[in-house]
Amino acid sequence: MGLIEIEARVQAACERVGRARESVTLIAVSKVQPLERVEEVLQAGHRVFGENRVQEAEGKWPAFQEKFGKVDLHLIGPLQTNKARAAMELFDTIQTLDREKLATTIARLAQEMGECPGLFIQVNTGEEDQKAGVLPREADGFIEMVRKLDLPVKGLMCIPPVEEEPSLHFALLRKIAERNGISGLSMGMSSDFETAIGLGATHIRVGSAIFGERTAPHG
Ligand SMILES: *Cc1c(COP(=O)(O)O)cnc(C)c1O
Image (cartoon, rainbow, N blue to C red):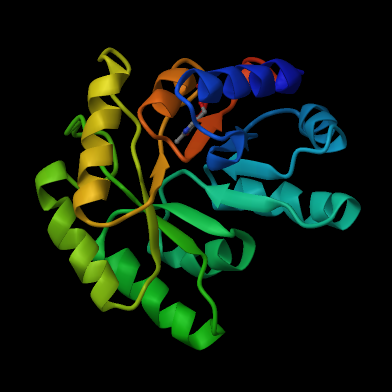
């Protein structure tokens, strides 16, 4: 279990750039990990987790929360409109808002349910066809549309292309956030979270470096 080592690295990365440790939320990405590994991290006291599939999360987190108490859950994978209600019931934050139809669905459900998870808008900074997220040039308009629906835009999220220098993508995400008055920045994974902290990440999403390599194929 790499939680202690990652905690130390997060702390050191914050110190290097003069940031308070509390300004960065470490999201432990537990998708497809064996339950014993997730339980170890819970046992160690960690309470912020990320999952990328609603159904998979529904299968483990209600039971874990029975046992360990409230956990702060972030959805970091694509959300289908027909799973929006289930996602809103389980997750505290949805980081992958990227379509008008999803935004209007969430707005309607939020009215009905009387509450709404925190929302991050996913930006496809690398403009990759296979990746979700709004394009950088469409981001300002999309943010405005979401705000008109009275939805809480807490932050922006990106997943840079694997073969590119992540810092360029992190800097672009930050620029879009700054000009729109958005404070949350979800960026940085196992291989680049220190770089992301240096560029202002408020949320880092770390999976394999905490839990070990994922054994199942998806994700
Ligand atoms: C799986 C995943 C992560 C974690 O990836 P690691 O490289 O294992 O740290 C972070 N963000 C998203 C969106 C993911 O799907």
